[in-house]
Amino acid sequence: MSRESLCQRCFACQQGVDKSITVDTVAKGEMKNKKERFIWFVFPAGTTCNIACEYCFKVSSPSYVWTKEISDSILRFLFIQSKEKTFKVHFFGGEPMVMWDSIVDFVNLGNELAKVNGVDVQWGMTTNGTLLTKENLMWMKENFLKENPFLLSIDGRPETHNKYRKFPDGSGSYEKIPISLILELFPNIELRPTIMPDTTKDWFEDFRWLRNLGFKNIAIEPSYEDEWSDEQLKDYENTLRRLGEYHVYSVCAGFPIKMKWVDTVRSVLQGGESPRGRMCGVAFNSGGIDFKGLLYPCQRYACYNDEKYAIGDVWHGWDDFKRLKTMALLREFVRGDIAQGFNCVTCLARMACFKGCNAANLKNMSSRELVSPVFCKLTQIEVKIALEVMLHLGWSVPKRVESQCQVKGPTQDK
Image 1: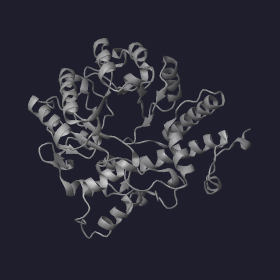
Image 2: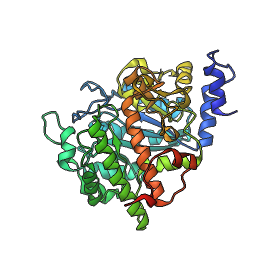
Image 3: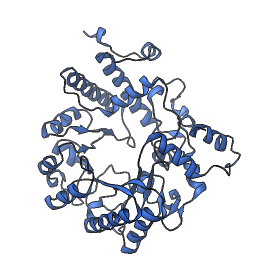
Image 4: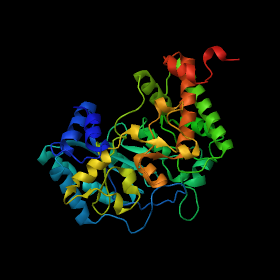
């Protein structure tokens, strides 16, 4: 029986949970089909951070750090109680590097427990890069994932990056990142820039800057939680169009680069169906563990520092009902805000829209089933420009899509 039919039977009719269906039954079947490792997002410093990004979605407090007791309890849960035999641990925050010594101890002991309990574990991190040194980078090279041991947050040129990613005293953080050393040791490291409404106008130049520095893997993300004016939305469209042109040229020249938003739309459209089924990996193949040992469906829920989003703890494991309730949300149940003019039935981006972030929807719209208007607007732009790229490159686009979407194909060039 498919995951969708399980959810429809158990939850859509609101008749309760079938006692024969357990979290393990559903999750293990999903993992087997997707061949994915479960990923635990662990918060050694809570949401404490050494810089104060103005756009950060987490709630920070300097008192949120691991204790040795909590660290040992998390290790016991991960390697003994959770029953997972293959998984990743990704340190998140805040800034996990503020607890670097504790992370080293955690990983060393975790590797010992992995051997004793027959567990295959991989280690990684998301970091702002300002606390990276040659010593800890070399340690990561030996102990973390080889190609991408961490996800690095850099927003672009120094003036762009420093506009929002500042230290508490107001000084910029760009100069503290050892970029040359990082690229020397990890030439394929993944970069995660955030595009803000007021940085989008000339962000293509930031992209070129990052490429010229040597970064090959740049996964851009616009800020879905800010207000965007009509002019700024137009700027975002123009920026994506220039990025799309860059992508087209790179493919034609034989040096293709990755554009995640293009690849996503292409994959969905050529698959022939709109995104359906579960919302991302929330509670299925991901979980968050905060500095207090509470379990969350993913890292985003854990970032909010609100225990009402917790669905278990490391001493007792998942709350089975709360986890199933989180897992049960299907994309087809999620919709745009019709009151503000966003109807998924008539939206031309619906065939490649993933309906936003489960946790962000709940936080921003007070409902996991309601997508923010900003997300709708930005997604419509992304899908439109991705279609333009596909048509320019001659990649197949379903006729039903090409006929409905007014995009500029190669035969329409002036």
